[in-house]
Structure formats: structure tokens, C-alpha cells
Length: 132
Image 1 (cartoon, rainbow, N blue to C red):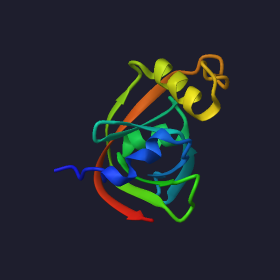
Image 2 (image 1 turned 60 degrees about the horizontal axis):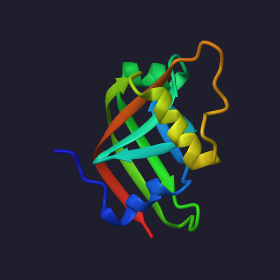
Image 3 (image 1 turned 90 degrees about the vertical axis):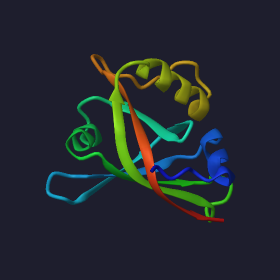
Image 4 (image 1 turned 135 degrees about the vertical axis):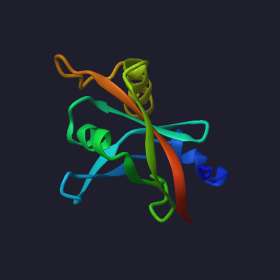
């Protein structure tokens, strides 16, 4: 049964709070990347480009850890451990534009590369830790 993200920490998904996403490399070492994140019900969403290291890692091993730190209070955070249960290109372009609005105040994501295919990753939370 997925663990529900505590109500007291859901406000982090409305702020410009960056998340540090950890995935597993083929040799078992960790790879950490800052990502923009969002929430859909009890699932955490983030968006990336197909073919990047985190994309390759997650297609091989869906386990993730993510820490979201409150930009207004760095001693308040939400840590999530879970699995990516869905990877889809469907709606990913609109989703990155939505995140660009939240994080940059822009209507369109400005850093798209030629030929880039955007992807949404849906994380099912299995454990949370909170502080603050």
C-alpha cells in the first residue's frame, strides 16, 4: 500500500521548491539531479527528457529517493522513497510548460533542445520522512 504524503507538507508542491532526485546507476552507485516536481493526488511527478541519465536509470530500475526542501525554511523538508510506476510522453510537453510557469514564471519551457522528447515520471510513495 502506498504511503500518503502528509498533508502538512503538500504545500511544498505549490512553492518553487526544487527536489533532489536520486536514481541508481548500472553499477549500483547513486546519481542525484535537481528536478522540478509536482503532485497528482498521492503521486509525485517530475519531467525530464528521454535519453538522459536519470531516464535510462529509471527504465532499468524504478527505485527513487527524493528530497524537497522548503525554499522559505531549509530546515523543513519532505523526503520520499518509492518507485516510478509510470513513464509517459503523453501530456509531457504541457506538463513541462506548467512547471516552467511555476518555477520560472514563463508560459513556455525555454530550454527545449532540438529533437528533445519530454517525459513525465509518476512516483508511488512507499516511505516519507519529514522535518520542520
